[in-house]
Length: 372
Ligand code: ATP
Image (cartoon, rainbow, N blue to C red; front, side, top):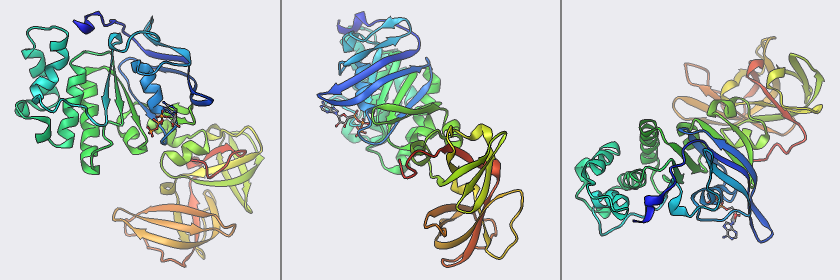
């Protein structure tokens, strides 16, 4: 009876000073992170930023170079993997091909010596909506169905924390969307902590209550999807979650409203949305907050305005038209206009860009604006 001794540690998952070095290379760099019990948490970052290594340390497949891991008040840093109240769902499912779906899901219980597994397995199959396919072999299921088996097989062990390592990576886009909603439903239903690793910002935003954006082994920013999108703290986050127009300027007035001089234009933004301690500031605005006006039209005085743009590309994509606009200083900015009977500007059109100052965020200007 292998895992009968699983720790029944309950509570927040807490990482303190968690570090992993491979030789002289630091893959995970002094991570401090608390993941509240019952939350759906996403670790989001580009390939190689240290997401998987972090998960592997939590599950016990990798030993940390330094730092500690707690679940509630119980330290599990050196606990054997199978004794941690943690289970992992991998991208490649790792189902047993010779066992049917029922037996795949029952596996963990039987291995622990549980005799009467019927009710638990049936409940789990119902939760992942696979009751009708219980007799099939994994090879007779779609990718999304196989993934649900993998989730059921992990959850039946009643872990406190479920780790999901790019679990939807092998699925096509439509199935991915369905599974995102499905996994979210399952998480709400079972109320366990889910830690989901992905490089897909849309996936993280769709599913998670809280996202940690990782970059080079560190957490760049932590917050709800809305917080990260509306108030990115760095150019990396501004570019990694959605698109941003980032314009370099100099602060000329500080206070509740910050005024910035940028390429001969005066722009303003709320002081509360400015993360810039220095006078060099990067003014940021999301493409969908910006509107285009013909260059000869009068521009509203209460708006931020950039003049002198020339449309270089207009892509009609149904609900919106996505423009690229070349500015006199050489930068290309993005504008997404909802198609609600609005004029469509052709490439070559001379335009002004306008947006509400309250929709503007400010970043420390001492960073690379291409980062991310
Ligand atoms: P991906 O999305 O591609 O899996 P990731 O963010 O999960 O990326 P990790 O797998 O955690 O990244 O890897 C982080 C870094 O550590 C990478 O640069 C990787 O090459 C390196 N790394 C991972 N495992 C080892 C190892 N066993 N030995 C040496 N370097 C490693």
